[in-house]
Length: 593
Image (cartoon, rainbow, N blue to C red; front, side, top):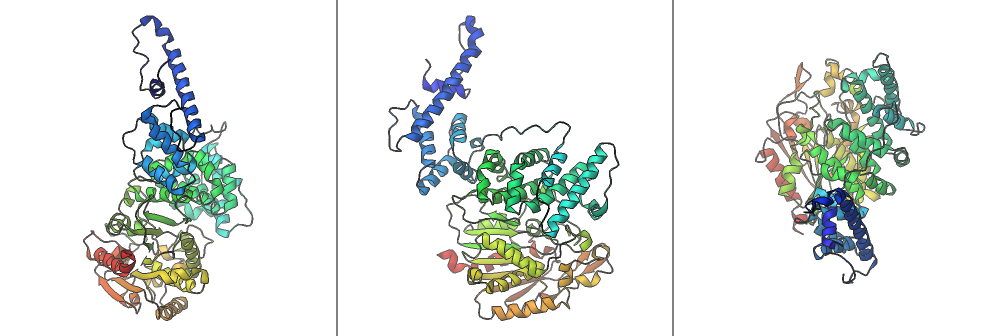
């Protein structure tokens, strides 16, 4: 009988059975290798059973195990301790392992529980060998395609008693997928009915277009817990994984898949199914990505899976920029970034690049998201901060709105965002709000709404400061040009509310000044001095100095346009350094404690 050490090494390919000198036994080598492999596997299973069954303080004198493997099994046992601190310590020690053999990582991967695996995925230094490849995906049905499977999944979800926007996305996706399937079987592809306004929004390949329609609808459905159960029961986790692998070079598709998965992870009873389907291995790799969008989407989902260290829940549109992983660094304050019209959670806060037309959506290519100054600069300068970026859909025109039935006012959006931020634990520690354009109006409205709700009082009490980047407190000229610019032919509600004559805007300004009278938070405002191109015809000073003047705190003019007012050119630029100084000053006492 071979030694235990050689048995295990044989299982890992480290002990060669092919070097035997007796050439006459070559015909039995394969049989012998398989026999030793089976013995090694049986030994691993027996060892794990004995260790997990026996008292933690027991010696290993009765267990047939090699000395250099004892640490691995001890860590596994420790990771299942009833003591939370011991479990966390075990995961940390595993993640710091640097000199293990491949088979030792595999032992952990095969024997650890769901809680430990999630913890390893959320540990910055974890080796990816801790994560097994996802299990094989089920074969597609004969004469079927991912597009058809996606359509069937969407059609299987409840279609009644839904929000108007969910109904719109679902009807559009099912309608266009029917046309696509007909085209693939010999018919003619065309966008019809509700699809016409969307034709310019997606790629040229019909199947890819339809997949995007379906995924957009599934994102909306996944915000409803009972629909998440249906998605899981109907094989959605495996189908989404297939799509994720097929569209590795399509950030739009991968982003929507991650949004769906992150929403499903809000439901704790689905955690075990998500883990068993192999998604944690994919997320563990994605969270290490250099692309901020990919990493933050993965970090959101993993945080929702990690009930061991994360009491908060990150709903759709609330993204972690820092810390992406578990950390021993105490988090002492939150900094929240709220974008404005046509903005987004990541692209709004990138470094300054070439001037962009206000109506020109910046490329969705992930290479555009590799620079995000709150993540790359602020997190290094102030590591004790939790940095969150918020995303919500906006449009300049109802014609280009992603959901034509959607008529979301500032009041509606503020209540929606306030609820999501509170679920993420905002208000439990000191807060700094950083906003651009319409985002500043949302911040003001959120604080006013929070002041009326006792359960939101901690948000008011813990607000230490607000930064406004070109926020039109007194309105903007933007809506006045709607009749002259094709993109603004049907100005959206957001644009209408920014009108200088908007009664809602005046009420918001007056109410906020009254609210802020007896509060002790600080305010810093920046305002553009250069015009911005609107379409290809008009240059417009979107937010003039008079409109950016809140009437509280400092107001600093900066020689940039409306888009670049929140995009510092470099880390040494005045815009970033003044922002950093404000955050440090406003949180000085909190960061010292």
